[in-house]
Image (cartoon, rainbow, N blue to C red; front, side, top):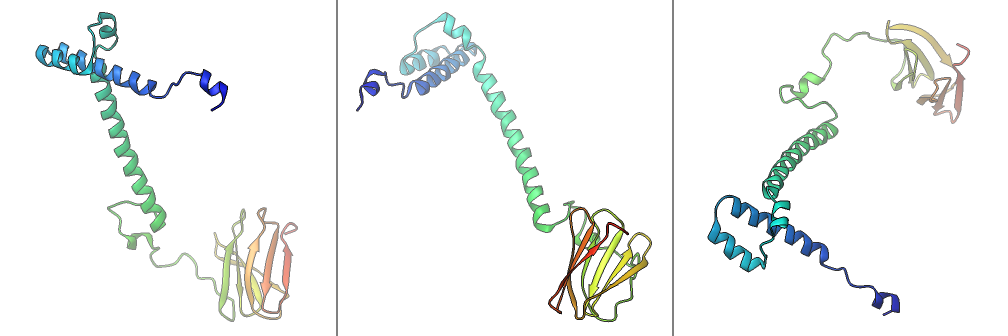
Length: 194
């Protein structure tokens, strides 16, 4: 053991003793304020408390305050646990949780808003432009089609691939559209001039 460690007094347990002392004084005050004289005398002997009027005043009503605080905290814990359970349910099911709504109500109902037709082969991907009302679709027919999803109007066909277009992605600003194809090419389409 080093010299500095030997010189410093041990503080281990003093916090627990002080906490026990305040709890004991609060219990003693409670017994006294409710007229339990014999119980108070027995408790003071067992807890080795001396009658100290200044200390007793300091702890007056403390036990009731602690109980009230515990009840408030317990209520808050229950509320937070309920909110957490709802958030977990929403995260797992992917939709807002309302006990009165069934999952069937989350699914859009016919008729569809628009039916966009124009590809001559199966569609492989559909994406939304990050800021404009444009929808881009790609297909095994080697084309990319652009649609206005608010009006349902066809806007333009992008041609350049020689085999199925498999995926699309806009950059974060929406100025460039990247496409990849089974023809083993990646094409970048400039949206900043349109």
